[in-house]
Image (cartoon, rainbow, N blue to C red):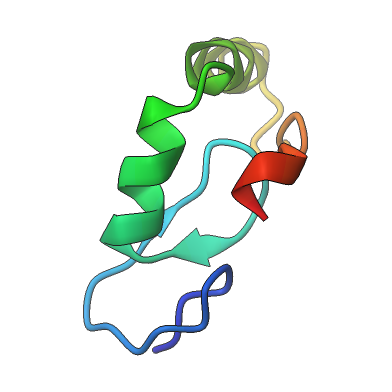
Length: 65
């Protein structure tokens, strides 16, 4: 599988907190360090708790594109 963000080939992927992309662990590390990560995580959690299991995220910040 290729990372939907950086297009690198990888065997392990995870979901982005900012959008619906499946990303590699290197991109996930960059996400975790981003200043908006905690906000994205909280909003995602709140959405799931309220029953929205198809939440698309707060949007990918330009500096992570």
